[in-house]
Length: 427
Ligand code: DGY
Image: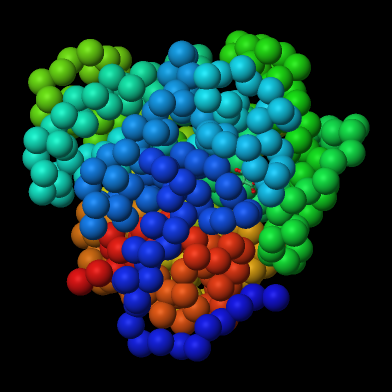
């Protein structure tokens, strides 16, 4: 059952600060107690923006703790298992990586460089900000080089993703077909998420069986990048990741310029140019937005989701494409009580409160709003911010919000929801 609190007229920012403090486990925040008891990468980047509003040193720590778990090949894992916790499955034993900080073996949308640039630009403590950026820069460069090198070895300009969890939009209907081709695991397991959240807000078992098959697959093949690229039964071009990576690379290049550092710069510049030339291949005249592509079948994925409009944030749309996307988002917002619903409500697979199949996520609205603003659609940007505010004032700091009712769903007292409120919804 989705939950609504008594409607309030203003956001309680003190409560938002308290949520960050309560979810702090010493240098990193868990997304929410119980359901997600570790450090997640893109959650953590958004969380750092929230900390910036009242504790800059702690904000930088969020990044340091995450990058302490970076793999030697440059990958930043999507989860760092800093401490044991019984309340989550699959834990480090299932992932089976042997790193100094136990971790998952996939990444997540690489929003870090964008967050770090914002933090650097808004920091009051300039000395601290400069010191931290100089420490983080080589790690960020290695991370971006990893994406381009390992996830696009053929230099097509479009990196690929090996797991729905890597998209951060885990249960999006965009992944249904590609995931259906993955075998199910042949061992039994006990899910822990259903002990925290109603089953009608979470993925079904057949999806979990395949999520776990993939986790097993990487482990069985010794995390061998080339083997996984050649044989992984799930391989998609996720336009959300492509867009977030592209914007973050531009932000990273700007940070390198400011710091006077040229290590990796020509490499990254070439990679971003390749993406810019390739992205039109993902445009759909019929849908008037970009589409994800299934690299195994070679087919576009005909599902309009919030990822398919993220090229606005990635600065990857041309003027005409941006205008079409802005119009699409406007009518999309008209169709639900609060927006932007993660899946377009006209989709037969739309479900207003199931994980990534319809609900609203605040950080996605922030990204799309930033994109709308930069393409010259300030009214649309404002509309996105207002509807985001409506979610929080109606229901509080939930993980996500039912697009048809604005009721809170998933985990409560959610870190990135509080962080987005602190960073973006204060006046
Ligand atoms: C989960 O377990 O639902 C997480 O989103 C995986 O990253």
